[in-house]
Length: 269
Image 1 (cartoon, helix red, strand yellow):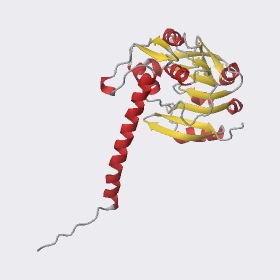
Image 2 (image 1 turned 90 degrees about the horizontal axis):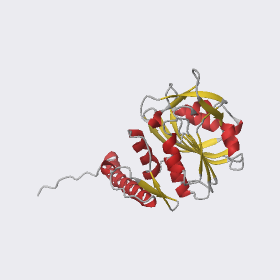
Image 3 (image 1 turned 90 degrees about the vertical axis):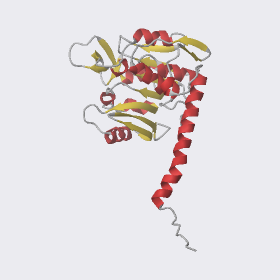
Image 4 (image 1 turned 45 degrees about the vertical axis):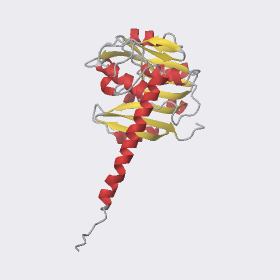
């Protein structure tokens, strides 16, 4: 009788065998989390392919009818904030009492922040006048203070540049702008001088604010989308945050942009 040799799987094959269940588990956990997030805000989420933004959501015990531009950007932001919780609300965050939302767009982040931190003070900044009516309508019943202003390193005026979806509008100081810009320091002072959580998604304007130094000491945690429009690199983002006193605790890269969570390295500062 012939006995065949049975070789044990190679290390590479074993890694592939063990990685498959882990990948499936991660997908299942992500799906369960997305479904739970939908239930939290009063809508049913099953699969991305079938999903349509609901007419209303429930935030802080209130039913809010949603208003937003009919573009892909609104759908993307809804997934980011309501379904995937990409900014990690209630994840690796201590007591959050003050929230600064720079680049609020139609208010989806501020709304989810209100739902998860019902007693916090929230200030939302959005310079694009086209989305301002939606932002004001979505947040009017949620005690969120709205500023139709840009935020940067200097006080002045900016112009809005739009070339795609509403959530991709950028600001520029070239030309005679009609939109008022305040400094990051001013935005912090309006919140009482300190910010527990800064959400930053301002389509590249973060690099202008990175020029500042002292005011960042009054920010505890950052959840931001960074942009690499002019040849910057993620390494520059990380080095800049480290220079400002933060440690990156999560990094999700994408083509030309990405998401970063960072916390102040010395909590007492």
